Image (tube, rainbow, N blue to C red):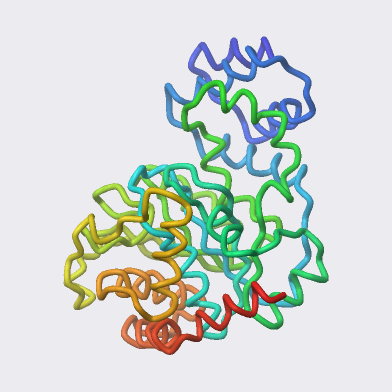
Length: 329
């Protein structure tokens, strides 16, 4: 580690293989907390490179408990978190809307980073029992069109880093890895990021690892399409900034996306929306995100067609049916 730190302190960067090797050694307990903290801190002081992020991703996947769900064409909907906005669970609702529309979703998730209630907090509160058992996950996909991959069950090697991350109390490059290390490695992905530079970074990483993907970032800092401002959308062959009005959508106020002050309150908001009792603002934000996910699956769809399909899933309670079946399993 001393040689790696010396290199980094001299403002050099790591190759993909060097990044992979050092993170593997960290997860194997080869270094003390001071060395790990020093390593993490470097990337708080400068931007991470594509090669470094790719190496860290490869290390995480090598240590992960992988799950073969390849009999299905899957999409993941997992944001980076870290936007500090404390919205309701937009990406989780989006996942169920997409599942309700008949598509197969392998949602990778964890406890909240920048919000009171992450997807794992929410679904656990609603009664979902997390599992990494292949037969259960395949049954969930078959019957509910969605399975939930609770990150700690698939990335046990990250336990080595947990005490240091807690002591630092800062967002590190490790927060960027969640959307990249889904243990089923689906061919399709929609991911929201909290900063435009992260969107460009993800674009470089995902274009070699996914059949198709969409990366979104709202220009006022949300890691999803918030409709509170224009948003950046990137795919394999495009990059554009879109105004809500371009989609014939009204702009939403930030307070209309509030996610609650507790897991219980967050779950109440989630339940109201998925039961068809959301506000126009809540419904539109969820359905716009779901429409872009559905277009990621089928590029031939127009936005209008995809949005109508999303509305039918949400307001026709197909998304709720997927949730109910998942919880019953």
